[in-house]
Image (cartoon, rainbow, N blue to C red; front, side, top):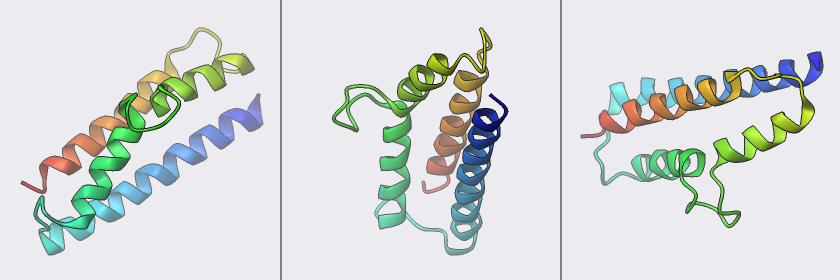
Amino acid sequence: CQVVKKEYHAFLASTAQFLHEVQERQMFWHWSPQSPVFDAVVWLQGLWASRHANNQDRSFIEQQLALYSATGCFGKSQEVLRRDVEVVEYMNDLIDTFN
């Protein structure tokens, strides 16, 4: 379980770092909602939060919940859901900066 948790946290840290880099560039370039960067962030947010953004009919968050639930590593903790929702909230805030 230590490896599973370590890799999960590394994945979230990498995702947050990527979003931070996009945010830093957005603050410099001030891209509009018509930019391809905006489209990419909206797509990524949809992938994480929407059931319609992929062919599995489950959001990435739901897929992660099922995956990590099967490991038993997080017990009854809602850590996976809470942290994934934080990533989506970060993306939502980032999307708002394009307006």
